[in-house]
Image 1 (cartoon, one colour):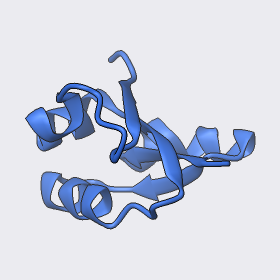
Image 2 (cartoon, rainbow, N blue to C red):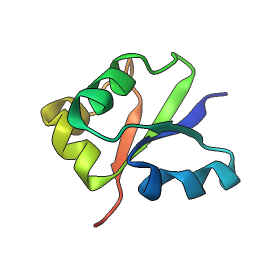
Image 3 (cartoon, rainbow, N blue to C red):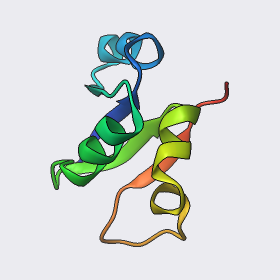
Length: 76
């Protein structure tokens, strides 16, 4: 079974920890990209803040690929 992770600014993702989500706080675009590159292989779903999605660009919104986690973007 896979896990769920969230990437974004602290204020956007911290509450998700209460639901068992692995929270990866990333306050700037470089931190977002680093968090994305270092996601554990067990992660099957990544929740991104809108800003984190913008920082990742097409890396987060590409067509689904079984080797990568599914991503969703929180609305602003």
